[in-house]
Amino acid sequence: MPKNQLSHYEVIANSFSIVEISDPIKVIANPNESLETVYEKFTEEEIQNPAENPIILVRDDNRIYGYLDFFDDFDSPKEMLAGEEATPINPDQLVPSAMSLLDLPSLFEKHYFFFVLTQNNISHFVSFQYLDKLPMKLCLFSLFMELEAKMLDLFMLKPEYIETLLHFLSNSRLQKAKALCKRKYKKESPKRLLHCTTFTDKKRMLIQSCEISKLPFEKHETDNLFERIEEVRNRIAHSDSIIEFLKTPEVFNKFLSDLRKINNAMDQLLPSAGDL
Image 1 (cartoon, helix red, strand yellow):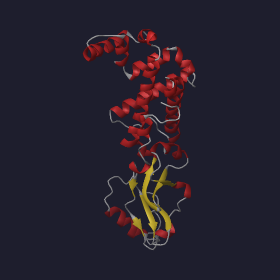
Image 2: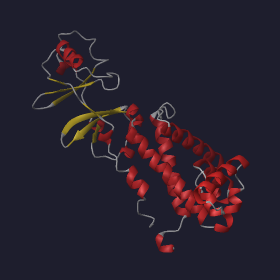
Image 3: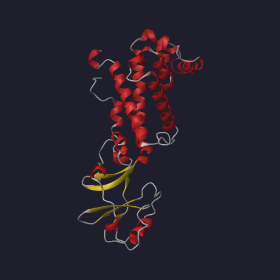
Image 4: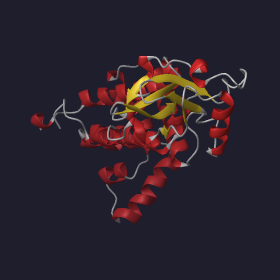
């Protein structure tokens, strides 16, 4: 694969857009409506979890006045008008609905939530906690699969070294690979054993190999990154929360940035299609 060409995994990861994790804005308030009227309108919508989608858009046919937050903006006198209480929307809080989901985490370091533009209309709302939704998990898992595939490709460049790599595994891990190899292939060989190893096994072989020094991380940084990758990977596999682990926008974005960085670095260790 040429170095500047996206892998199949990256194509999949980039195929998800922001709108796929966003919630539609369900309540529109006229600027001349009282807060009491708007409050009643919101509660009548029976939004399942107001804490996740507390936003009310304030607009008329001519302009957008801003937004109200269900939990913050109803302490004022009930007769106050929505247009007077509305918080203006900053232009940098607007994102296009077609933007790649992988470009979103870094934005949350500036704002905790954004308004989503569909054409010229504010249609949805997205916050940091929405990164816990399935499309984001599928993006990350695709990048994990890419990393595992690249580790395997790297090991296969030197077939004579595969047996040495396998000896980096503990006896119990090696026996599990042998058992799977027996069921899958009947006859065992180093290459077949390698294909029967898990992500954890491949990680250990990479960290123990001489190739580790060619990656743009210190060894302890690589160890730490792979520990975080395994944790997030397991959480996704078991339908658990990932933002309970990647707790802040800064932590989440650092993880995603490092994951993409190590995938790009692995590319540099592999021959391009023209070199084969």
